Length: 376
Length: 256
Image (tube, rainbow over all chains, first blue to last red; front, side, top):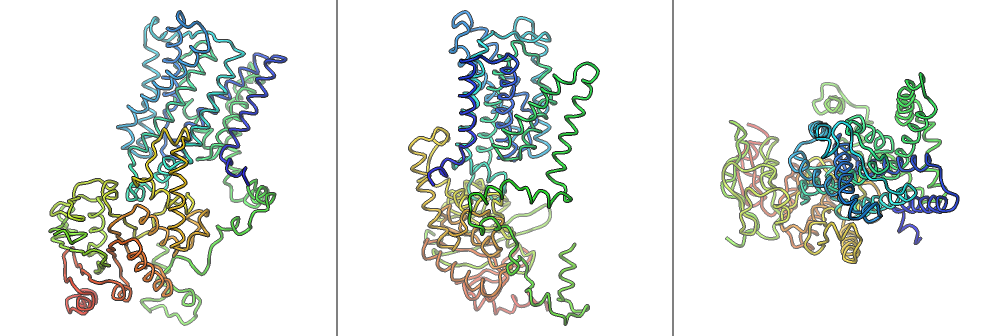
């Protein structure tokens, strides 16, 4: 019974456990360079997906500029650590400080973009954020060699590879804690209420602009953090990497994992990053063309599996949620609570009238006429 | 002046050339249940939208407990004490029943808790969260929704969804509650139950109720006074029985 209190934190616990296992392994027998690199890539993808889920899943606004915020964080955080190198060296303090600086600058950008842009909705907001991402990308591309490296990219200080992934894990755990804590507080409820019904949220006294901005700023902060980690993981950052393609890849992770589901985002981000990396290593040379093709086919198959009416019975048979409910022996009434209540359907027509036979077509108030109207 | 909860002064709005509401003067005393009736398109919901800040009145103004609220934002008006329900139910469908009510509670000064305290789970968070949940459960018990508190609000039957919307509006601690067709789509039993409930909440929460309704049995059984609107203007106002029997009103409804 006590465990139920922590049900929102299961994923955080699991990731903490994984982090401890990897840390012990790397301290004991040591890990291969490629494994560590893959691990870092996955962690960065998960942070990005979870933070984007805050805007797309919980706030319900489409943002296509997540890679732009990541780009700001990567460049500013990377530059900050390079500036601090003479004073701090490549110590953990420098690493942590630059992660925080990168995150804060990205959050500031989130606030500046968010203030005017969040008056927009849906497609329009998506276009503005898409534009922001592209602008940021080209600004950094056209900087001078001394400032941000320009087209050649920015060199970042080299931190101890064996340690970087541990800090990345810590950043991921903090991200998960902040997002789950936020979503299970009154602020998180306000954010989801805006997604569900903005008009009702306003009428219930929710300051819509304020909460939209909160979600946007927190989301871009963690995008910035992921950017800084990315820059340290790759030693060299090219702004061309942060195009809209990357934003959409993050969005794909969120959508596949299930919009509004943190656990889903974690799994989808891990899987997609893993698949992409595996394809990149297996399919080399002429076969490299197949990478994107196979990736696309897998995505299409997942979408079909999730939505096709033909597979309905199959999905129901292997429904993980119901399986878990069975194991836990939950009260069956709560599981089937979405079945229709036939006696309480929202209509002004009484059921007896519907099933009675003495209905004439030229009767103005006849059931058939009313049904006709509703059909339109 | 001070003894009216709501007072509208020549309230009106025009959309282009259309006068959706014109010269509406309504005075509602404390703890009254006041009805707003009229044929379709008479401007009843428009008045509600004016009073809740969805529309900005083009003429006139309105006072709540003597304080002018014209031009304030929707959330500011809600904080001042006007809460409403909608004609077509607007719940937070993907949230559980109790969460719907908790959203309503979140802006009350007694449950103040900033973002920092929530994210880092400081003691203040646990204190306010516990207090909010207790209050929400208390509200749900009044509306017989306590058993369903963890269900999705969209899975509730229609009548209960209406009740939940009223509960959510009451959670914001209003002094004036606006109900837009609360009995629409309810069967006679549910309507009778709703009448009892509205009287109960009026007494229990010490509030004033302004409601729109087409069901005349409901209006005459519940409302102390009514205003009848037609084509955006006030046709008749006053005591429910006399107003409903007014020949003008009968003409507006039946035609003639």
